[in-house]
Length: 131
Image 1 (cartoon, rainbow, N blue to C red):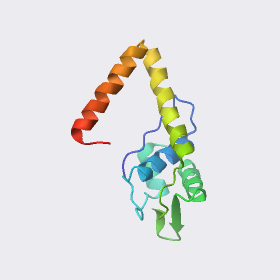
Image 2 (cartoon, rainbow, N blue to C red):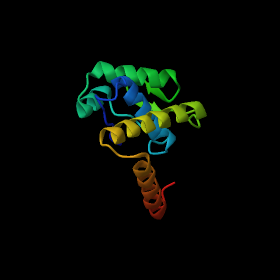
Image 3 (tube, helix red, strand yellow):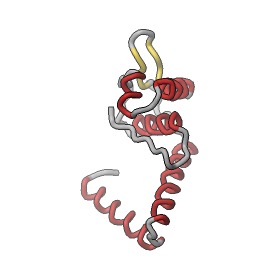
Image 4 (spheres, rainbow, N blue to C red):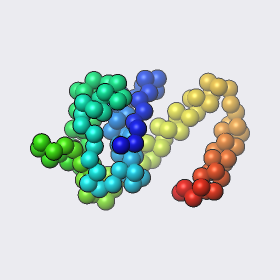
């Protein structure tokens, strides 16, 4: 599975970070329908969190219909078209933009610096064929 990165500085609860990142992986297609998620203990060890935190995230994802559990077999991405509504997608993007602005402010970058770097990254991604 693609790596999940936990931030202890942004104030977002760890289980919520796990939920958001798995939803993003699903929405982007990097985790396809039917893909198996790592077992709770394995993911907890890899991101150094309590297994109960991962279990809470998986339970939330299941409640939202993003994943389903097969008893004794594990957790899998469900067959729904997209687990993210437009509002949810905008909310997630807003969180990332807020994190970017906070970091840029702490590093004393101007608005113009931020926009210039975003434009640079868009050009790089466009050349690679990313959307």
